[in-house]
Image (cartoon, rainbow, N blue to C red; front, side):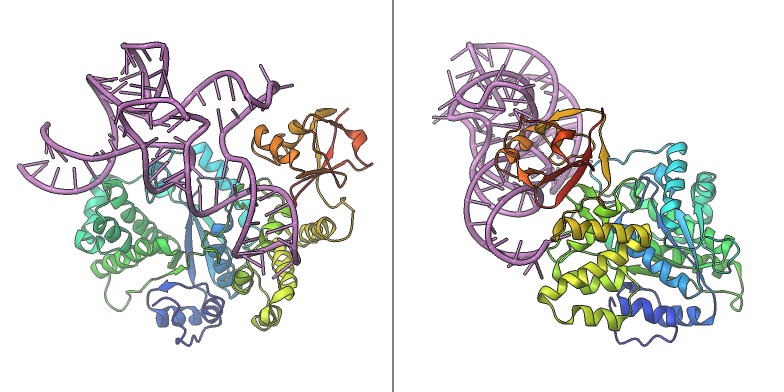
Length: 429
RNA sequence: GGAUGGGUUCCCGAGUCGGCCAAAGGGAGCAGACUGUAAAUCUGCCGCGUUUUCGCUUCGAAGGUUCGAAUCCUUCCCCAUCCA
């Protein structure tokens, strides 16, 4: 059952995962515990290479992987290059775009850079993480062979018992055959990794439970057919909880889109801001999941509530940013935040935005590609007129006012769009 | 293949005996006030536009009727339910 707190884990790894709230569901907990206690275990989590970076929504997975690796286990990041070619239609209204080989390769390479911050890929170490792409084996599959070897292990009766499918059928929602088959492909991934790398554990988001368990069962059945009872080994699966914020939204989404981990997509400063702006009620949970602070320390930070929460959030933001972007960037972001929201007026910690133009009208400046303080000129105009835009700390209410370097300090024009968005703009000459 | 009900702005969802509809209401979002860079609450905004009681684009798609269409007609596409 989800969140079964009565279970006393013997292995440090599983105990930590449970304590910190990483486990939603799992196959035999005691067996996982035993396997983890016995020695290094190879495990995998699948990711979609549909974007060039993972985002905060994936971060629970990554942190769980990091935790396991910390206790000596070997992570595999499976990139779904092959499944992306099919296009997983789960919960999608439109058919997902098919990705070209080049795109998948580029995305995979880019994501690798992000994973590097969280996992140790050093080939020399005993628990080195590795990254694989299921295109390498899925694309070679032959339909008839696949049906004969893999398909025969699945019964439709069993498959429709899976919650995702069950719900769809109960609600009389359409369920495409393609989607139905997706589960087989994912189960096959697990089988392949089990054979190829001795991978015995699969993790994933709670929506992946059905697919994960399908892989576990496939391996059991294949083994049942191929090996004797003594050498048969069992594999396991777990899911992490689907995180929602206290006000009911999905973790990792903001009005500006997903909160990516790649600094090319979201600056460390904005990343820091994402965490510090979280809801009070989520702080303790987030500290457990996304930082590596001791539980006792987390309790101390969040015990008091009220204004003390600011300190807890600052720690959360700092730790989370340090993991994703490094301690230096975290420090810079923290400093920029203190300057922006505290008493200080030193904007130097903010990344300067260098424009080619030597001057711009305020409306145009504020909606500029590189700034995007507001999403349309119309809206920008309204906000400007209502006094939401400040230059050098003073509201400027004329949208047509021309802004140039002379409106700023030596270090650029200090532009504020609303309370929280600040930009240091350097004009070109 | 047949019958029925549908496709409205980010989402949900009003509106269809043609004009007063850029389109009710709710949610989300943005800005402001209050605060703790929180929550709650209140106020304003919430299709786009350097002519802003004006212009342009939008109500599945394309045509048509009309001075005028989200609203009427035709064809087509899509979705749901039931029947085969």
